[in-house]
Amino acid sequence: MNMTLQHYLNKLQKERNLKPTTIKIFKSALKQYEQLNQMTLTELLEEAEKEEEKGIRWKHRQLPQRLLQYQNHLLTNYHYTTADTYLTKVQTFYKHHLIEIH
Image 1 (cartoon, rainbow, N blue to C red):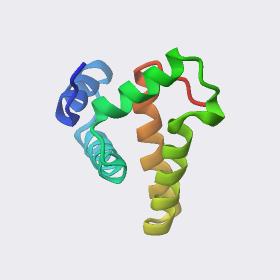
Image 2 (cartoon, rainbow, N blue to C red):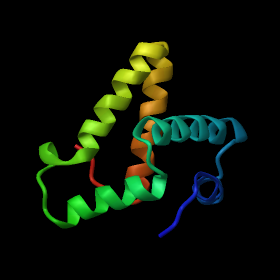
Image 3 (cartoon, one colour):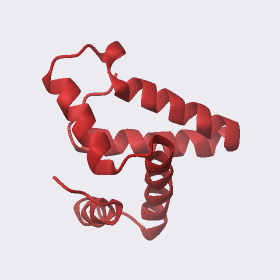
Image 4 (cartoon, rainbow, N blue to C red):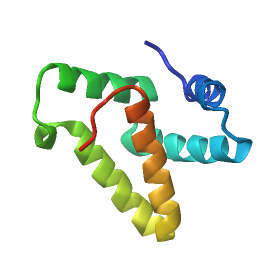
């Protein structure tokens, strides 16, 4: 699966009928998440899927570490409510693709 950020946003907007402002927030959060991890959404999703399929316990997966790193980045650079909103958008991305999050 090769998913660009714009492809995901278009799909999300059609499936959930989201407002342009909500899509803008998703775009900003996911773009920042890609840059922080130096990986594309496709690579991040494939990594999470492979670890889940291998039965790797949650605490040993890359995903919780990536989310924690992103949360720390957000809390350092943004107001708490913005940080919470951005983190939620990234978690929604994973949940939308049926990746379990604890």
